[in-house]
Image (tube, rainbow, N blue to C red; front, side, top):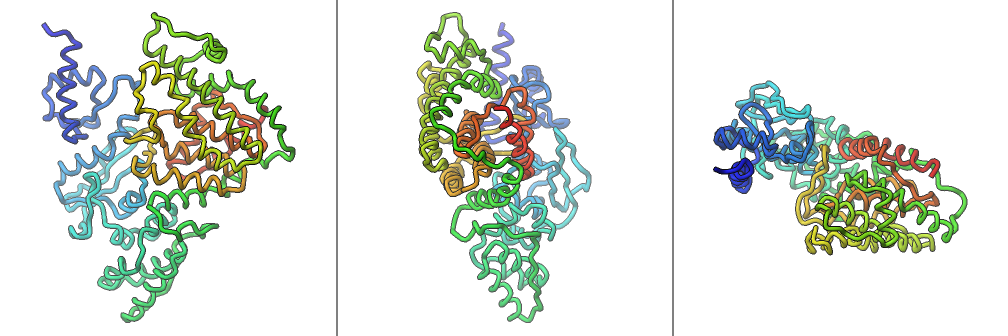
Length: 506
């Protein structure tokens, strides 16, 4: 007779086959009752609503939202295609967010359909779908992205509400920056006589420093006999003009976010100390903080390490034993990797304290920090050698976060742009706050992003004359909450203030 383990394994094979076929929203009819009940009991299946499920992981605790946020967009696409066929599309505003590269899970997803019920469909963790009964654009005005039916970019810009440009300034600017010629929007504006919208788009293009597109819209509409008044829908203009050079959408969005967050980060963080740190004394103080720093940084990431273990690793006296399980070995390897990476970071500190550009140093050295973090685990056979290759080659998700990191293809474009911004930044507060934030926002690695982010933060701290900062594991919740607010809402002030409090008494 098959054991319970063998029965669950058989059910997992069926679930894996469904996932391999690209199914995210799993219906009751997709699994037999026996398979479904086994997978639910074992934690491999999570109910979204009656008759609908998603795959999950048993090692996630009760109330863990990660599986839902990971599955959100795929589930919505599957569910809507099943319920509404081809007769649906996302709202023009949500379409613009996706065109801009913003895949943050919304609290409510607005869907347009002639079959819409006008009633919210409750979803897990305070999210919902709202199918609005209304007409949808013709097929030529729509695109399909990952199973989601969305407005094409020009149609979305014309159809979006006026207040979208104020509520989502970053994404609106990133979407506008993708339009290289007025001819992309003019046929729609002329055909439909959209004089007010033409004036709004002309003002918006002028705001992002695309005056030629703005002028072409105004001149062409007037030549066709329309009375058009230019109106800037944004409340302000970016202090810099980061959108003039050609770049991928993800890079435009990064530059916009940096420009928008910069002044808030500076005003929420203390000025640099007047005195210049003595390099020898500074490095000695950093070395003295290693055990404390490693304990808290690794604990924030969920590793179970003790100060005693870290001391043994530091002294070179730790050796693996036969009675250690894989989890114990992984914790020890993490401590050993942290020690190696810490030594590499100290070399970077020497360069910065000698006057080198901290952004350039971080760009050149961060790959060494990453390799040192995980080399012991690879040597021990707990990770694959390919895991040391560098930036991730697949999707990655942050536990319990509505923020969905950029796709792997975007990471290779974003990281050089990120370090260009960091190297060009002349304000220490902006380097500290935005350097840490954007590193974890991009999430370039499969693992270790938090540790690399804190290393980078402390390199920027040294460049600004601040002491090495240890973020206590007891402050993990406010730390992660501040990062979440910056990632999802674009408000970096709480994160800047949090880091500011951490500099006190260090």
